[in-house]
Image 1 (cartoon, helix red, strand yellow):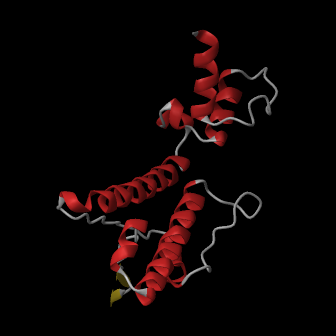
Image 2 (cartoon, rainbow, N blue to C red; image 1 turned 60 degrees about the vertical axis):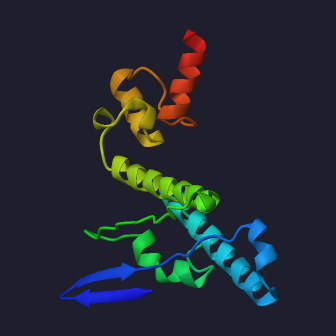
Length: 173
């Protein structure tokens, strides 16, 4: 971890390392296996934090496990940004085809981070500014209230844009 500070600005550089795969066990001793286990636990907790943030966790729906590991405690300000802070995530993959399994895993985590960022960005927009399949529950409810004022407000309270679209596609096909 490297933290660079300058006049109210802060840049955090964090090497999240790679997850250790079961096939790598043959190359490691007991101490390295314990380190690999700790790395995987930390990355799994970080992944869970990103998922909860993407789903706009509330205390009632999902507790963001920020205090579970050292890396999530360090990244709390990044995972739960306040004000005008910006976050840039870089995913580095190995160019060798021998490391493809590790690279694919890195892409999977990066994809979840991207989904979280898009979800946070779309949450602040009105339903007319977001594609219907990407609507949140609140945006879908607002669209229904605007378009069909006669419907009771909780008619589709269970649905977001994607699940609502799936239901309608199934009925129309």
